[in-house]
Amino acid sequence: MNQNKLFNIEEKEPDWKKEWLGMPEFVQTKKEKPYAQITVRFACKKDLEDFSNLISQKITPKTKAIWHPCILRGLNSNKIYIYEP
Image 1: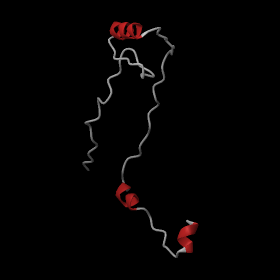
Image 2: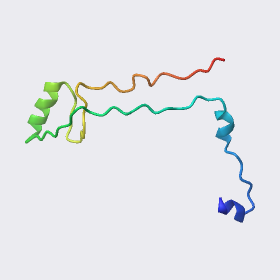
Image 3: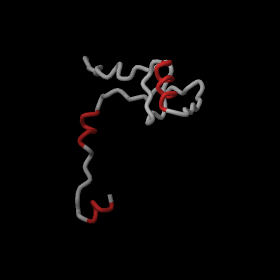
Image 4: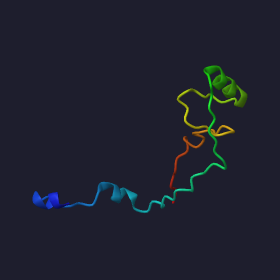
């Protein structure tokens, strides 16, 4: 902002504000927290694969966390908001 004054640049309202008029407020729902959390260590690759098969979820050495049962992601990714007055 001070830089705009330095170069005599007018401060304008951002373009998105004009488009945003009348839009509903976005309210972030509370993020679901786990009931419990555990750390499981595997002595070898076979143990990891056996556990992965046992719970029917893909787990790799790079996997940091999983939900059990598996959460289906992207269920609402094809949904859009349409305003019809």
